[in-house]
Structure formats: structure tokens, C-alpha cells
Image (cartoon, rainbow, N blue to C red; front, side, top):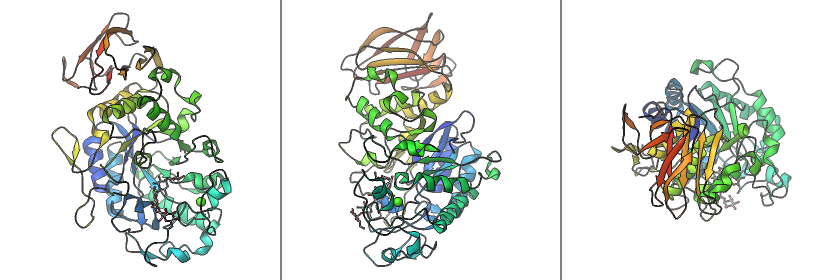
Length: 477
Ligand code: QV4
Ligand code: CA
């Protein structure tokens, strides 16, 4: 349950929030495969309720487990898994099994696949679920009470009872369907709101991955559970470590550090010692689709470009955790759904001549520094942090063995032609943040020299547009 099944040389998960299946297939072939991304977290693939104005969050209100959403149907879905797996990119499905759709404005709720349901009487006939599959109504309103969090309704979403055998069986069927369709794993939505014992029983009943999509025989799906544990509630992330868990503390600590809440020099000991989960069990991220919408929380997002690039680069350069990279659509208000036409069909992203997305899609994963740092992560895989340097404040640098080196400047002063030690071999390297190698001895960005004995002469202005410089052994000039 804890193996993401990354293809050799690939790693990292990109959350292609609200993308259509066929656009993901194309992105795997044109970008994610060649750039050695490990996999994609897709939006919930099952039929959801249609809400007026089509807010993004309607996808967290299931009507049935049919593969029928604004992202596409089952035929498109298999095309995505087939084409992505073929280029070494895995697909992880976001699955919503804690609850079904809440009561809507109309008595009868209509789904994206044409099914109907009557939420107020717990009639979801397309599955079918009836009142016996649900907990009796009460509201989640006390995070100091585990029973309340798990047995009551999260914002009015009718709460399934996973201790009930029939409910378990239907969830297992849904998971098995997705496995037949070629996925490599699951993000389990709202896991904190379900009992770990029930989840473990469900995961143990799910079949192995489908070998026709290239998975090794007897591979369990990768499972990562959404558990928000800020450290002061009744439910702990450690209750869920029979599979992987989203590490929200990582997101808030990195957000705090790179937005100036604490000197970067403290990051020298970053990792499990910061009350984070064991590295191999933690899915880590700078932001996700929820916390990028909570302003004032200290979470960094695409809206703070330079700090975001610095934080995301730190994450990809640092050995702790299984990395997830957010890829957003631009939004001004929190309800706003993805870019769409006049009939509310989702628009495909277009790509401009610089390789970046346009027409409302942000595509952080295509930003040159971020895509380059995915490569860095893969090149330095297996190496520890060596030769940490800092200026006692917000200028830091470290190497990853003999494979890579990175330096950050978040201070209000330049790094002024400073000698920084490194464990890289002597030679000339192309900075992957400002450019890339364009021939054997040419780099489109700045060139950095590692002198004998691993000394790097570095300068970086406080006004540098990225605030980070990175080099690795596969980009020598
Ligand atoms: C409204 C009222 C309620 C009332 C209810 C009555 O606010 O007080 O009880 O009507 O019917 C939407 C609306 C919400 C509305 C609800 C039901 O925003 O106002 O309730 O629908 O109609 C996403 C959004 C939610 C959204 C939900 C379903 O964030 O706003 O609710 O989808 O559409 C906790 C959890 C954690 C969770 C996080 C957001 O521990 O698990 O909150 N994160 C995941 C997902 C998240 C998703 C859900 C869980 C639910 O990442 O995106 O919520 O599946 O921290
Ligand atoms: Ca529940």
C-alpha cells in the first residue's frame, strides 16, 4: 500500500486538478513522461451531483460510482491510463467514500452521468445505497471528539457507514473497477472522517493492480489518505500509517518558512524531527486544492510566484517525503470552477511558445524552475544532504552527495560572490532554474563553476526573480 509504483527514473505526483482525461493522456505523452514525473493525481472520476454555476467542489459530492464526470467517461478514462502508463506515468484516483451528495436545492439531485438520487431520504439508486448504508444524521462540529468526526456529517454530506458490510462491499467494487481500468492507486478523501480499522479492511479486500497496464504481478495499489492533523485534535495521523498519509504539517511549515515566518537556516534539521511522519509514509506538498483557497493561512500558492518557486524547489531538492506538486487553474473566488465554455464544458489547456499554459490554466508543473527541479529530484535520488551552508539567516545551500547542489536567497541582501563548499565534482554546470543545456558546452541560463575541492563561487541578487539556483551532474557544460 505504500509503494507508488513509480517507473524507474520517475518520481513525484502532479495533481492535475479538474483536468479532462484526454488532456491528461496528451500531457503524459508530451510533457510528464519525457520530464520523468512519477504520476498524476486526478480529480474524483465518479459521477457527482450537478450544482448551479458548476463550482469545483461539486466533484466531492458523489451520486454514483459510474465513471462519468466533466473530465470524461469510461472510454476516455481507459485511454488516459493506457497512454500514461505507456510513457511511465501512473494514475492515482481521488476517491470520495466517506459520504454521498448532500441535500440539494431540488428534492431530486441530478448527476453528471444522468443518474438521479434523493439525498434527503438517502436514496442513491444508481449504486444502490439506501438509509441502511448511512450513519444517522448529526453534524461534524467537534474535532476534539473522534466519534463526532467519524460518525457525523461533514458540512451536510450524508455520512456512509463503512462498518456496514454492504457499504464495504460497494466501496471495494468501486476500487476494483478503477484497478481494472488501469490506475496505480488511490487518494482517500476525508480519511480522518472514517475509522482506520474499516479502511484497513477495505484496502485488504481490494485486488492487485492490473498487469495488462504494466504493473508487476501481485502489486497492491498505492494508498494515501487525506488526514489533516495539525497536532491538536482527537484524531492523529499515526492512526493511519498502515498506508501513506498526506502530511499537512509539511505544507504549513514550509509555507511559514518561505513566507518569512522563520529563518531558513532552521531548515537544516527539517524532516521527522519536526513532528512529521516517517518519510516513506508521508505525501508532502506546498499546497493542495483546499488550502490554496484559504487566504491568511500562511500557505503558499501560485499567487506568490517567487516564494512558491523557492518553496517548491526546496521540497523537490530535499530528500524527505513523497512529493506532490499542485497544478491549478487560476481563480479569484473560492467557488469558481475550472475554465469552461458557455455550456460549462471544461476547456482544454493551451500551451504557449514558452511551454506554459494559457486560457485560465496555471500549470505550475510546467513552470521551467519546477519542471527542472523534478529532474533534479530524480537525478539526486538516494543521496543524502551533504555540506549544508547558511549565513545564519535566510541564505541557505546544500548538496545531495556528488549529484546536485542548490542555493536559496530569501534575505534582503545579495549573496555577494561567496565561496560555498559543495560535494560536487569540479567542473562547469548549467543552472537549471534560469535555463538548460542547449549543446555540449552551452547553457541558456547562468553557468556555475565548481572549483577543485568542491568550492562554488556563487552570487545571487536579492532581486533575483527566482531566489534559487540549482545544478546537477546531468547538466554539465
Ligand atoms: C452547506 C453548509 C453546511 C450545511 C450544508 C447542508 O455550509 O453547514 O450543513 O450546506 O446541506 C460544499 C459547500 C458547503 C456545503 C456542502 C454541502 O462548500 O458550504 O455545506 O457543500 O452542500 C469540498 C469543499 C467543501 C464542499 C465539499 C462538497 O471544500 O466546501 O462543501 O467539497 O462539495 C476538513 C476535512 C477534510 C476536507 C476539508 C475541506 O477533514 O477531509 O475539510 N477535505 C476533503 C477535500 C475537500 C472536500 C471534502 C473533503 C469533502 O479535499 O475538497 O470538500 O469531500 O478539514
Ligand atoms: Ca464518516
